[in-house]
Image (cartoon, rainbow over all chains, first blue to last red; front, top):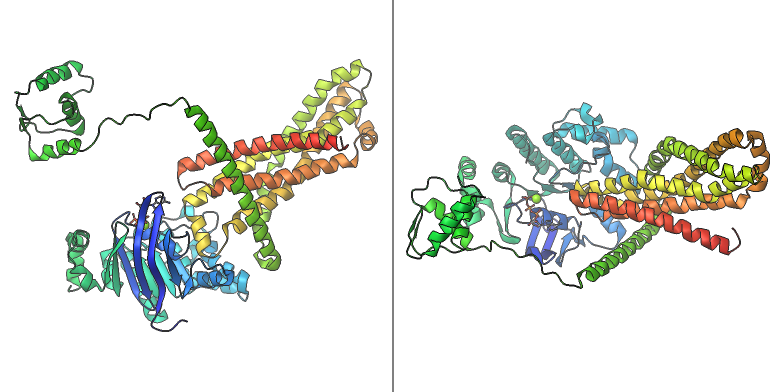
Length: 263
Length: 344
Ligand SMILES: Nc1ncnc2c1ncn2[C@@H]1O[C@H](COP(=O)(O)OP(=O)(O)OP(=O)(O)O)[C@@H](O)[C@H]1O
Ligand SMILES: [Mg+2]
C-alpha cells in the first residue's frame, strides 16, 4: 500500500462547517513522501482547522483525510495507534501539559508508546528526552521546570521536542517559529532542514514566516478564506496574480526575503 | 470635541438639517472621530445631506455609516417566551443527562480496554485523585464531622433528658450518622471541594489545547482524565464517609459525656447493639455511589465546556449545582426506598 512516491497525507474534497459557516471548503491537498509543504494564509483562513482535521481531532462535515493510506477516523484501534506513532504534532499554542514537568511532557509520547509496545526502559526514555532537548537548543536542566515557568519561545521549543521525540516520519507543525526571535527562528529552519535531509521525513508547516518558507519548502499551499487557492513551487506561487499573494510575498518584508534568494 | 449629551447643539444641527437648502461643508474639519461622525449622522436622520462636502479621509466614515443599520432593535417579546425558555431548559438538562450516560458508556469501554491491557490502567492518576480528593479533604471533613456531631447531640440532648432516655443518644446519633449524615455531609463537601476543581481542570485543559494534544498522541482523554477521577473518588469517598462518621460520633461523645453522663465507655458497649452492621454498609455503599457519580458529572461538564473562559466558569457552576441536586435527590430516594424494603 505504501510505496516511495505516493502521498503520506491525502486530503480529499474536505469541508468543515461550524454552525452554518463553512470554514473549509473543497480542499484537495497531498503531502508527498519526503517533501516539506508550507501552508500559508491570512489569519482565520482555516490553517489550524485543516491541521486538526489531518490529525483526526474532529470529523469533517464533508470529504475525507487519509494518512499513510488509512482514514484518520479508522475504527480499528490498532490502525489509529499506529498512525499516532508515525506523526509528530506541534500545536500553534504549544499545548504543553501544564500539570507535567518539561521532562514528562517530552516523555509523554514515549510513555504512551511504551504502554502499548513495551521495550523502553526508564534510562532509554531519559536519554531520549535529553537528546531531543539538546536538539531544539535547550539545556538539559530545564527538564525539571513546569511549563508555566517557561517563556513563550522556550515552550515552543519544548513542544517541538515533544513533536520530534518519536522520530516520527510525518511532522505537522502549526507556526513553529512564531514567537521565536529571528536567530532562533533561523536555527529552527536549519534544524528542520537537517532533520529533513537525514531522516527523509515529510512535513506540513503552517507559517507566516517568509524566511522559513523560502528556506525550506519544496512546495507551498495557499489558503484563502477556507479555500485552497493554489499549490505549487514557491516560484510558481509567487507569480500568481492574487491580492493575498501580492501582499504576502511582495509586501516589503516578503520582497526582501525573496530577493535574497533570487526569486 | 462634541459632548455626547450636548442636546442643545444637537437640536440646532437637527434644525439645520431639516432645511434641504443648507449646504454642509466639512472640508475645514481637521479631526473627526467616529463619535463625531455618528453625532452628525443622527442629526441628519440617517442619510447624507444632498449638498455635502467632506475631505476624502473623513468621507470613509460616512460611507461606512451609510451601509450599516445603526439601530438594532431588540427581539420582540412574546407572551409564550417564559414557557419557551422553560422548555429549552428542560431539553438542555435532558441532553446533559444523555451526555453523562454516553460518557459512562465510554468509561465502561475504557475499563474493558484496561482489563485487556493492564499497562494502560492510569494507576498514577488514580492514586493522585485519591490523594488530592481524599487525603487532602480530611482536615475539612474532620472539622465538619465534629461540628455536626456536637450540634446534633446538643440539640437532642434536652429532649432525651426530659424523657429520661439519655442512653438513647447512642442509637439516635449512631444511626443518623452512619446511614444519613455521614454520606450526606461528605458528599456535599466533596462536590464543593473536588467536583468543582475536576470540572475546572478539564475545561482549562480544553482551553489550552491539552485535550487535543492528548488525542494527537493517541491517549484517550476519557481513559486518562475521566476514569481516574471516577474510580479515584469511588475509592476515596466511602473511606471519607467512614472518617466523617467517626468524627461525628467523637463530637457526639464529647457532648453526651458533658450533658447526658453517657460516657465513652458506655458508647463502646452500647454502640454495636444500637447500630447494626447493615447501616454501616449502607453508608459505605452510598459513599461509593456518590463518589463515582460526582466524578462522572464533574468530568462531563469539564469535557463539554467550550474553549473560552466564560464557558469554563459557567460549566463549573453547572457542575456544582447538578452534583448538589443529585446528592440530595439520591439520598432522599435511597432513604425512602430502603425503609420501604424493610431496611429502615
Ligand atoms: N471551534 C470553533 N467554532 C467556531 N468557529 C471556529 C472554531 N475554530 C475555528 N473557527 C473559525 O474558523 C476559522 C478558521 O480558524 P483557524 O484557527 O483555522 O484559522 P488560522 O488560519 O489557523 O488562523 P491563524 O493564522 O490566526 O492561526 C476562523 O474564522 C475561526 O473563527
Ligand atoms: Mg492557526
